Length: 370
Image (cartoon, rainbow, N blue to C red; front, side, top):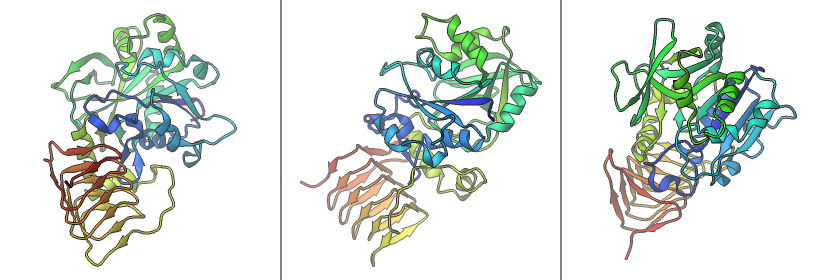
C-alpha cells in the first residue's frame, strides 16, 4: 500500500473519561495490561502495509512521545516514510473527531507525499482491522470517500453517533446524527479519502477551521462519491469511563481476546523487559490477565493487572483494573475499581463501585488509612 498514508487523531473527544485523561490524551490511555489505545489504529495501519503514518498530537502530548519513541516497535523507524509527529491546532477543547484546523495545519505532510489516498482514524478504538480490503472496495467503487461502519453496533456507550444510510451498492445517501437509529449502521471513526479530495475540502474551507471534516463531507454528499464499508468484528469505542471499564473486561472473554491479539495481524506495542510475575504462598488468581513484573500475594478475580503491581497478603481484587506500579496493601478489598498508575492503597481500605459506575482513583494518589 505504497500509495496510501495514514493519519491518527490522538485527541478524539472523550468528555466522560474523568481523571483518566487529565494528564494524558486518550490515545495514551493504558489498556489490557500492556497496551495503549494508540497501539490499535497504528498497528492496523502498519499491518495493512502503510509505511508513512502521521499522528496529530494534542496539547498534552508527552505520554504519546514517550510511548512511541522513533516508532521501532511498529517498524516505522525508516529512512523513507516512517512515523511523523504532527502538531494539533493547540486548542485544548477543539470539537469534533477530525477538526479541519488540525488537518489544515499539516498540509505539508500531505503535499510532500506522493500517496493517492489517506486513511484517517481516531485513536479511541479497540479493533483489529485490515485496511487492505477497505482500500480495494474504495478503488473498485471509484469512491472519493469510504466510511467504515459497524452494522450491529459495538461495545461501548454510543452516545451521539453518526449513522450512515448506504444504498444497495454501498453509496451513502445521507448521514444521521443522534443517539439511536433504525438501521444501526454506526460510523466507526475511520475513513479512506482520496488525497486530492481531502486537499480540495481543506482549501475550499480555508478560514473555517472550526468546522469538522465529517460535517464538510456530509455537506458534499451528492457532489462527491461517498461510500460505506461494513466491518462485522469486535469493536470497542472508548468515550467514557464505563466504556473503558467494559472494554477491558471484554478481554477476559477468550473469543474476543483471540480476535484482537491472536490472529495473524499482531497489535504492536512498546516492549518492556520485566521478570515473570511472582506469586506468593497466599496468592489466588482466576479469570484474570496479569502482566509481567508483578508480586501477587492476595486474591485476584476477573481483573486486569498491569506490569509491576504489588498485591499484598489478604488483599482481594475483584472485577477491577489496576495499572502499572500500583501497590495494594494488606487486607484491602477492591471491587469494580479502576486504579491509575502509581496509586498506593493503604492497608484495610475497602473500595467498591458498580459495573456500570466503577470507582476511579487518579494517577499518583494515596488512598485509605487514617
